[in-house]
Image 1 (cartoon, rainbow, N blue to C red):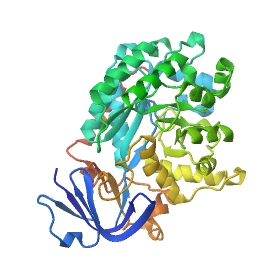
Image 2 (cartoon, rainbow, N blue to C red):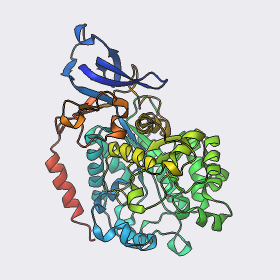
Image 3 (cartoon, rainbow, N blue to C red):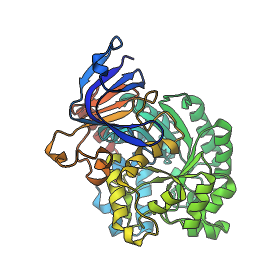
Image 4 (tube, rainbow, N blue to C red):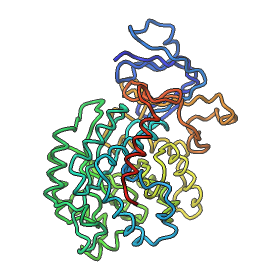
Amino acid sequence: MAGTLLKNCAAVIVDDGTGPSVLRNVDVLTDGPAIAAIGNGLAGGELPDGTTVRDADGWFVYPGLVNTHHHFFQCFVRNRAELDWTKLSVIEWLDRIYPIFSRLTEDCFYHSSVTAMAEMIKHGCTTAFDHQYNFPRHAGKRLVDRQFEAADLFGMRFHAGRGGNTLPKSEGSTIPDEMLETTDEFIADCARLIDSYHDAAPFSMRQVVVAPCQPVNCYRETFVESVALARDRGVMMHTHVGEGESPVIAARHGMRTVDYLEEIGFAGPDAFYAHCWELTHDELKTMAKSGSGVSHCPEPVYLVGAEVTDIPAMAAFGLRVGLGCDGAASNDNSNLMHCIHSAYMLQCLVASTRAHPVPEPADFLGYATTGGAALLGRKDIGRLAPGMAADLFAIDTRRMDYVGTRHDPLSLIAKVGIGMPTDMTMINGRVVWENGAFSGLDEAKLAADAEAALATVNF
C-alpha cells in the first residue's frame, strides 16, 4: 500500500504517549498502514514512490475515534415513536422490543452493520466494537461472520463482541426463548470466531471479544466458562454492568454485580463493562484496583432517563474509560463524535452534584481515542505518532461553523460539537471517506439494500 502526504495541516493532534498536544502548520506522512512522520517541510523532501499528496490547508487532523460499545442490529428500530422509553416502563419496553429483535434475519444483521459502520466512519470513527448478543435460532450462527463481511466492505477496523443469553425468561431473564442459547453453544461459537478471525498482530483489522450479554440474563456458568475461554485464548471480555440490575443480582447471588463478577474472575485489565451508571464509589474503586474498564455511553441517558454516569469519580479513582454509542434502542444514531459533546455537556449539567470536578474538555476526546484503545487492549491505535496506525480524520475548519473556535483544537469537539461529517476519514492508511463519498462504494445502493432488508421485518 502506498502512502499519503497531508500537506500543510492547520493543526494536528499528536501524542507521543505522554499526552495530547497540538502541532500547527505541519505535514503528516503515512507509509502503508502506519504513520511515518509528522512535522514541518515533509512535502519539500523526497517522498516514497507512489505517495499521494493531499492539500490539507485549513484541516484539523485528529486520531480516529474508537467506539467501545454498540449494538449494530438495533439500527433497524430507530425513530419509532411506539418504542419510546418515555411512554413505556422498562418491563413494557423490553416485552415489546425483544420480540422484534427475535424476528431479524441474517440479512438484517448484515445490513444493519453496514448502516452503523457507514455512519460511524462519516463521523470520524475508525475502530468499532459491537456487542452482538442477539442470535435468533432461525437466523443461524454466522451473524458475526456477516459483520466482519460488512467491516471488510468499508475497510473498518472491527472488534466483534460475541454476546449471548442463556437464562430463560421463566427463570428471571427478559429474553424470549427464540434468542436463547446454551452455555455450550455460546462458548463453542466464541471459540470458532476466535479461531477464524482473531488477529493479535499490530495493525490488526479483526479481533474477537468474549461478551456474554449481561449477568442478569445468563447463568453463572456462562460467565465462568467465558473467563476460562478468554484467558486461554488471550482475548478481551465485555458485558453490561451497573444499568439497574445490581439489586436483581444481589437477590440471586447475595452480592451486587461488580463483586459477583470479581468473584468469578470476569474482571481485570482484559475486561471492560458497558454503562456502570448505578455503581457506588466503593464499587468504582474495586474496578480501578482490578483494572477493569468502563465504556461510557452518554446518549442513552437522554432517552432512558437514568442517572448521569459519574465520570469525574471514575477519573479521580483512575478507572480506564472509553466512549460508546450504544445501540439504537437507546440512542438513535451511530455518531461517536456527537457522544464526545454529549458526554462533556452531561457532566457539566450535574457538576454541582458531584464530589469531583468535571474533567477537562480535551479529556473527553481522550476517552474516545486513547481511552477506547486501552479498553480494547490496543497499543497501536488511538493516537497520532510515528509508528502508530494511520487512523485519522480531518475537519476543514475554514467554515463559519468554526469562527472563534480554532484557537483550541483539543476542546473543539467536546465544547462546540461537530455538526457535519468529516472531510476525510482514513483507516489503516487507506482513505475510506472523502468529499462526501465512500471510496469505491455506492452509498445510495447501500441505503436501498438496507431499507429492503428492513422491510422484511414485521414490526
